[in-house]
Each structure stands twice: as structure tokens, then as C-alpha cells.
Length: 127
Image (cartoon, rainbow, N blue to C red; front, side):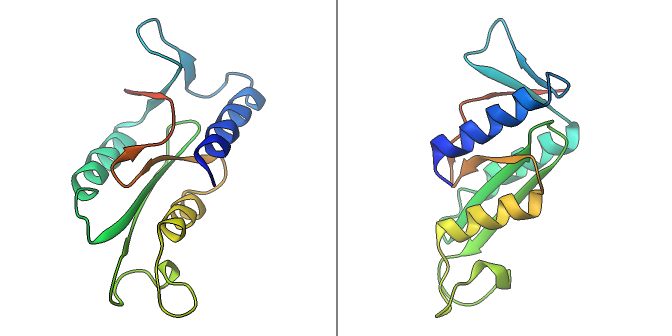
């Protein structure tokens, strides 16, 4: 999913939720904000520590309501880790890590980080 598509999917889901989720507009933030649970906060922190390891393709997906997060690190070479990281021919790609993070997070999720890059234009607020 492209960055634009990911952002659009998030915004559409938030609009369909009718404001019942944690999506809000904060006075000090640029763009939408998302309040996340302490567990998701811890998952983001751990992800950011791990994403500096360049031997893996990293992706982090979180739910639109800020209650779930899924981080995936697919090895760039060799065969270790999640079998779902690999395509035919035994290779992994960033796209596989992205897809797997979204799939494992479940419905109503979007990519927040790809590698060390924040790809969603949203401000995270920690509860």
C-alpha cells in the first residue's frame, strides 16, 4: 500500500467511525492526532529501537483506535524469522514486511512506520 493510500484508508476509517475512536484534532498538533494505549506506546518504542537494525525490513502497523500494534522485521538475507516474510524464490522485500504488519494487526489498521521512516501524517499522543 502506498503512503497516500495508507493515509486515505486511515482517514476514511476514522470518518466512518463517526469520531468514536481516538482520532482527534489537537491544538498543538499538525494534522490529526491518535491517542494510543500504554501497550501500543511500548510497542512503538520497541519498534523504533529495533528499526535501526539494517539487516531487516521493518514495518509497524497500528489500529485506527490506537489499541493494537503489530511490528514485523523480515530478514534481508538468509532464511530466518517468519516464513510469511518470504516470496517465491526465498527472498524478502519491504513490501512483504508492510503487508505482513497490516495483516497481523487486523482490520482497521494503517502503516505508521516503514523502516525508520514515519509514513503516516499523524501525531501520536500517549495516554
